[in-house]
Image (tube, rainbow, N blue to C red; front, top):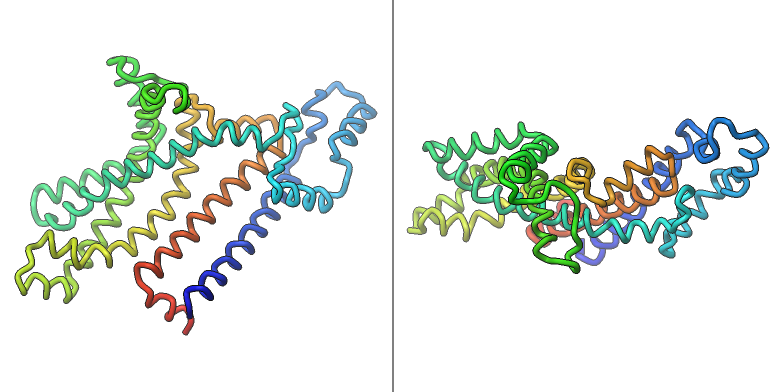
Length: 319
């Protein structure tokens, strides 16, 4: 199977997945109990007032009509208007997105910086004390919930030592230094669990490489352990590591919602939770749809990286 044909096939899967996700997200919103008109006007509103508001908001029209209007709007960048704040959803997302973006990207970057050396040491030195300590460290990281790490970080570095702010967010364009100071604690709290998961996959992948014939051959002809691993092993080990990176990016967005709440950061997660509590479904649907789109794009890039790292996978799928 040629690369162009493979990409077309993956694009078809991508758009079908996106369409199914849009039906599911809109359908779940329609099936949830409760009435937005009652939420806005209160329980004391008369039936006539509730009916007038439903007509003004367009809630009296068939769900199928509103679904296609919603999808058509998103294709042109119009995510609709918040039924409560009366502000465009796309405008609100653009305001909140940088906070979540930096939190997730820096969280993954820090997780990789921590995980790769820990995983390699745990694999190469697995029969020594330092390798055992690296494995134990990753186990401890798995047992620490992100919100708990965030609370401990606030207590130690914000309350006791007063080195870092306990909450809030400063845009990068306003003050790069304050932007970084406000992100240190939430990023580390978010990265700890991710680093522990990735380190375990790195360890398993490296151990598998160490038992392969090509690695033993490299060692037999005189390559030292570390250069042989870098030259002959990392490319093969990277396939399984890339797989877990794609999955962890998805969980990072979920973790970011929790971390934003702990540190009172004005990101997509905070906006989503507020919209759910206020039953502002057009905001909920638009935000969730954006997160689904990002996750699908990441998964597509992970799939593409497979065939770049190992072109044999294309022929396997074609057979």
